[in-house]
Image 1 (spheres, rainbow, N blue to C red):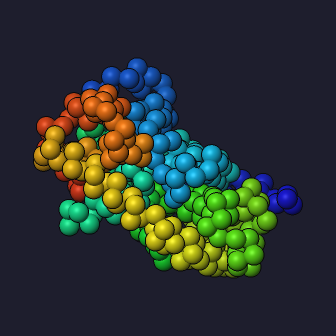
Image 2 (cartoon, rainbow, N blue to C red):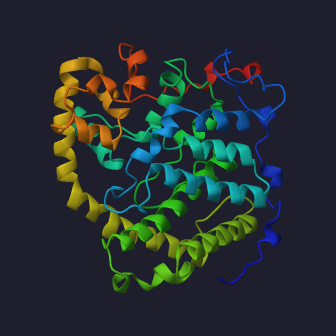
Length: 355
């Protein structure tokens, strides 16, 4: 792997870094686990709250694209989150953006993922007839489910970064009102999953190496080279443009082509192969949840893991439903009126003095 000159980008966007004193603050004045509030950066406190949460700890048991049962080294939502944090942290450190805020956003971005990842997300949308999004659920989990319904009491900016990180197929649009760290985490997510999911698709022979298009090798021959080159190109373009950007020039064009190819040849193909069986399991699971929780059954499903759905949908549970781990999150809030389709992220409810 040839060494690229990253030093030329050092602190190139430092003047655009989001400053803690500009935060809108937190929603509540009660902060049980932050005796360090007058000493530590508020976004560092956010990062640690998220990483110590139950929802964060369930991520190893949620599918990224392919089930970890297929192969031990296939990524799950936890390893994907670590990948996103790595890219965001490296770029923030080099460019001079707010590292703690970038890491906090990246840590939170997928905690609302459903069992089986995007297949579970699609299932809820189809069965309810409403658009369900994991990024909305991530904000809901952080605000209204963690800590027995009290929430993590995160800063507005961390929550907003998680809410706005996701993009579907096609162009990676950027809102003109977005802060730099928010845009960075959006790009970090795409860089992380594109190259990692290609790696896993090859590992599990969803695609074969001789079928990989030539533009996939623009960034390198292996995972490390590709991520390293993408980080370099992101930093390079961002310095040239004067803000976080990965939408112009040859590198961005090649990345967009690869990402489109991944949707057509990996993501949609995986759905075709596995989604019918996944939906059958989810239907069996919902039969039980409907009988137990009635109006909050979809909220319960959102908090389950792949393994828990597998157990509930099979005959192997043997009456042990009350011992399923997801109930530790769900039981304290099961009779609350939480709307899983509404993030309820009103900036007017956040107070600077609660930092």
